[in-house]
Length: 171
Image (cartoon, rainbow, N blue to C red; front, side, top):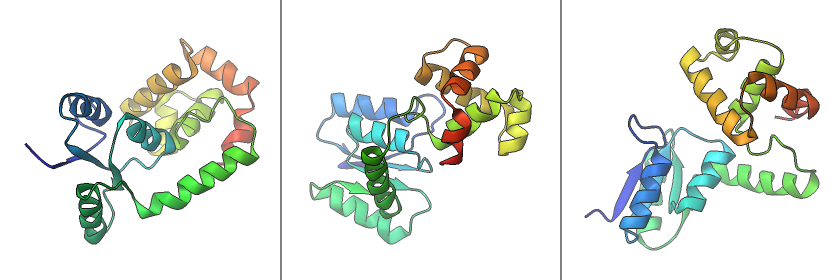
């Protein structure tokens, strides 16, 4: 039985958040550090809410990864140093800004939704954002769930009604 589990968010059969939920439910004594490329606030906050003991980016220095493991093993929590200022800024922004329907979307999801609201196809969005068409489809599925819409038309109307362009420019 491991003391610490390093877990990625993006995995082929089950995403890391689902694995995290299972590990925390069945083996609550195992410490889990999310080691990922995902630096958006939605993923970070979801991982923390589900029970991640640490969250570190894959491009971090080896010493920082080792520090995260030591910190978590000793009972502490760890968040990648590059994300701490992001979290503090996010907290400050929440205090200073009215909430938006787009706040639960990652930056990339907002970019996809913005381009979708301009009438671009999945292929065109992929070209603009340097993403594969399949990745764009995955983002769109996530957007539909988060915004509680059924299709592209509903998503685009909601985006336009809530001034997606203005929100997009603040990213």
